[in-house]
Amino acid sequence: MDDYYQQYAQEYFAATVNVDPAPFLQPLARRLPPGAAVLDVGCGSGRDLRWLAERGFKLTGFELVPGLAARARAHAGCPVIVGDFRRFNFAALDFDALLSVGSLVHLGREEFPGVFRSICRALVPGGLALITMKEGHGTRTAADGRVFTLWSPPELEKIFAAAGFAVAYFSRDRSLVNTDDVWLTYVLREKTAPPVPGGGDGLP
Image (tube, rainbow, N blue to C red; front, top):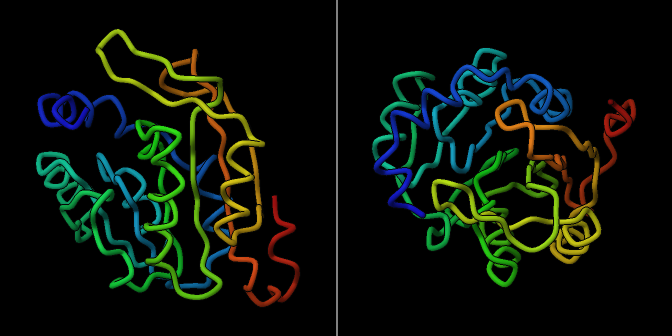
């Protein structure tokens, strides 16, 4: 799977960089304090890095593929760590929030819970996480050979709860790139987080 993104870095960049991320990033952005530090795990083209940075947040990307990492740095003007999220020590980091927009979709069911817990170690206590995953059952192999693991909301929510997170926001949306895909979008908050003044978790 990694070889695909290495080989087709430019094509992947071109296919994703101009998609408007506002619909799925706004639910996170509304809940962040001004100037919050955000880690984008699997930042790809740098599209989401740039959108959030333009709104005053402090963004850092994390990307496995050097070719995509370079493009993300150039597009967003943000630092990007090159590494493998399946092995990286996220506990050494300290972020108010993280996002993983479609970057965990190739993980198998057995692997996903552990990787999710690992990347969330980058968060400060009470931090927020934006996660998007594809809806469905089993797996699906695309025409280009990529294998995607599909999830139902109850499956994901059980994993999130076991990791100590509560659902602050949820939506189910048709993909803007491939209309055959339905994305499940979650904003998660650690259950130990203090209450947000003004009821921030009630925002749409």
